[in-house]
Image 1 (cartoon, rainbow, N blue to C red):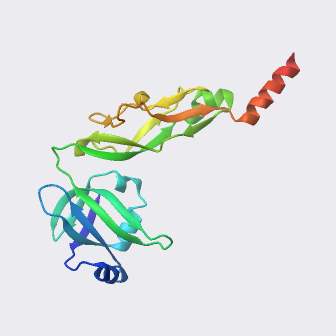
Image 2: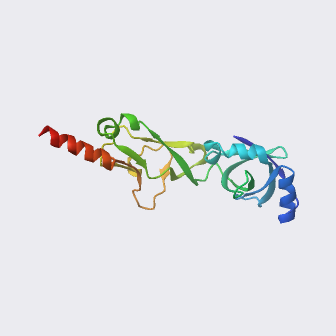
Image 3: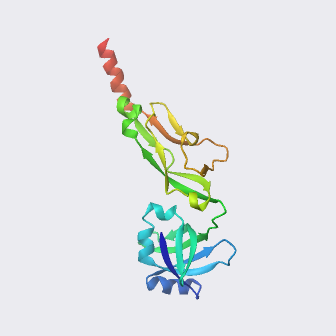
Length: 199
């Protein structure tokens, strides 16, 4: 994905306010061997880009004065109640150095799992993103959590995930729970009552 930015000479809250009033958002690029660089981005383009999941977990081509840098979105601040992006932070990436990022989880095949199909269970998503480490070229937009074989009382853990080539989960030794399957309390009572009536 491509992002166009401009060098920002003036700094300070007054300059940032004037920048926002002119339809731009202040930002910064840091990391790598070059010095941090203050930038300005078109607010509306950035606001719409932030709504796309891929923008948060893709290597971005950030163009400044005709020069393109490979960066990752690392942080952004939005106004408490206005539809306004206040600031954005980007980190330079080196193609040969691993990056540590959070990537969204996409849950698939819940409707065909035994838990849902046979028992009317609810599958709860305990986590919606996963900490991973990989080279920039291997960065996935998202990771799929396949729920095909999940039954009632079972959980899906990080160790159960099929990660793309070159990607490792950063879990600090914990096999974190990603999803669980459980039957709603009212459903259990109804099944028990039905079983009693058959006796």
